[in-house]
Amino acid sequence: MTEKKMPPVPPPVGLADRGAAFWRSVHATWLLNVDESELLTEVCHTLDTVEALQLVINRDGVTATGSMGQVKTHPALAELRGSRLLLSRLLSSLALPDPTGAAVQSASTLRARRAARARWGAPDASTA
Image (cartoon, rainbow, N blue to C red; front, side, top):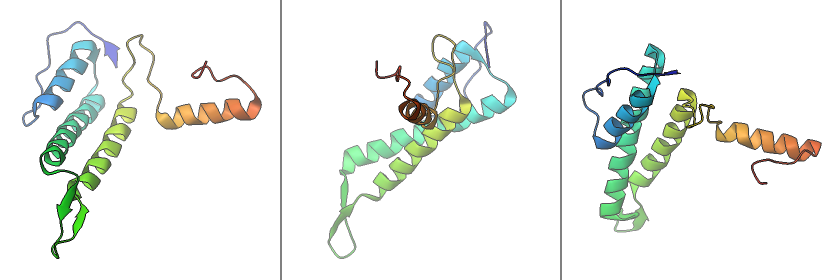
């Protein structure tokens, strides 16, 4: 992934507003290779899925009525949680740099670094 100054790359067909906006934002800043572009496509579709599921929960609430009239957790909540987890993993795999150009570290990398600092007595720069 490198910085670029090229004409915009149109978003893939089928993306909704949020996914298409993210696609344009990334392609406006970075030149992606084929593998990164494919991964970005999946990120954008997942963003659209997350937004659609959130809209369902906003409309229906966090509970639903079961077949026997019981109150239960809305099924879209589990799907939303899974989609957000997938989105996090896809974004980590895509490894988009932060605005300074440094790769954004995954949550697991940050946790491991914090644990190592705690174990070996080095100060944790993220909490300073």
